[in-house]
Amino acid sequence: MNIQYVKAYSQALGRDMEYKTYGTEGQAVLVFPSQDGRFFDYQDFDMVGVLSGFIDRGLIRLICVDSIDRETWSLSQGDQHQRIQRHEQWYHYIVGELIPQVRRYPDETFIATGCSMGGYHAANFFFRRPDLFHTLLSLSGLYYAGYFFPNYTDPLVYDNSPYDFLHNMPDDHPYWNLYRQRRIILCVGQGAWEDELLESTRQLDALLHEKNVPAWVDYWGHDVAHDWAWWRRQVVYFMRHLLEEHSYGYII
Image (cartoon, rainbow, N blue to C red; front, side, top):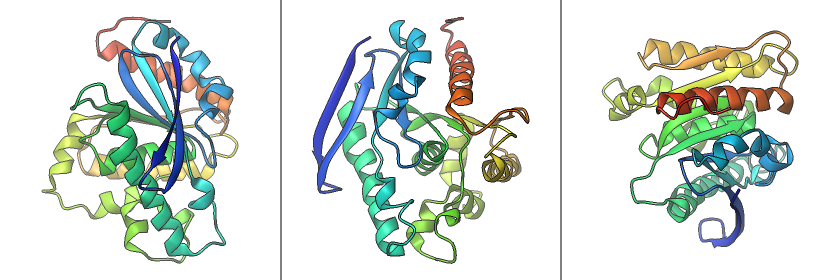
């Protein structure tokens, strides 16, 4: 497996940022880490390992990005506006700097994926920029920003709250047709530590259904917890289906 580590200065964030890629061919997959996570977590928790069959066959290429959640979503005692403003700078780093760096050709689009907070990030980027992402695979995601910004109103919080901005998006907005042409997969367990994520997934499921946006929303069993052991099983299961849809055949 070809693995590359990159450290480069970000103009948007005013500091060096790191990411890691696995593989060189196939569908480009942008991986967002879970809360407070780092770009190397996907490898450390064996998510790269369980996907190695796809990577080694040239079917997918992972780009594992770094987060700054400790400066934004997790900094609960920090200045509210500064927190979300810093997140927006990170958003512009991903969209305006990292994606152009990792794209192999100008119009390449990506699968966005992540677990837990990474699932939120994946969904937020997908719904804000469906021109950049052709697929969303969110595992145990939360889809409204108010959970991290209670009793605080700010246009930037709204802009980063998929359930809220989708709920209020006009029916004639061109993004609705883009969403309908994309692949959306949301998965959540019904076991330990999934309660808030389960409810948020149900809400987004109902909203997408109301807006006539096709989505595969998969509710796993009551034994399925908010845990890497389950996310490893889920990512292989859904990635296999996504690749079979692209006529790659049965892989592992």
